[in-house]
Image (tube, rainbow, N blue to C red; front, top):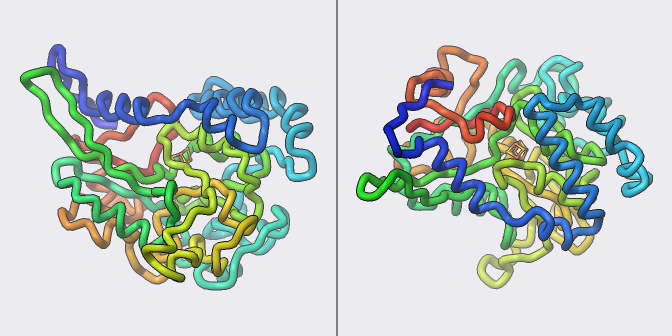
Length: 333
Ligand code: SF4
């Protein structure tokens, strides 16, 4: 991370954005009270998952603490995180057929996830995003494009743009902060998941397997960025007709019409960098639609890529650096 220029008495921009995230976060107990599983266990596991990301606890210590209670709470569905990097054992990463079988889940029926053998389209890549706060005009077109692309229902918004005021009167400024999923390298959401429904792919994207997710909401509380939502089964049917009731082929899986008790209804949901579009050589919908060219997307493993150059610039910083999550989303001050 580049050094932050500190003016006396003026909070840094990064600190102001972190504070805004904190202020926007719902009360964790209220999120879980409404859910199907133990609130107290969820709060403990989420807190410890964040400690794992910060390096204060090992994954083994995490499961030693919670194994008995989680097994009792989740029964047959329970599965301690076997390997947060599932898929790294094979070339190219991602969820292959063997991994999917081991997790008792499907890999879908269309490209790119259907290409479970051989080289993947993004072998060796680590997808990342850079958001230029000086260019974002707060038009929300990215939010709308994301909703249209991923057909997210009411109460589920993968990408929001928050207005944040920072500084001390009279030297105050306002910035528009887009907030997608950070696709963390050390994701607390992966650590906390008691059924291994969410995992990190080698390409940098954190995946949710809707076939395994049981909707416990522990990941919603573990995520330091408020990037996860519960799908309560609501629809925009009145506004968008039948299209609004068909699930987007996220992660390359076609799920057809939304229906009660059918995934992703009841599941946790979040931004996937529009992974289904990447396989077609397209950028995430938010990047493609941004009228201010405030969003950059590409391969962070390629040091010559624009995202790598910008992520390494003196203007670059990440949210909640002290949380140890190592986001693959960078901001430019
Ligand atoms: Fe998981 Fe995304 Fe939250 Fe990071 S920002 S903890 S990857 S949901």
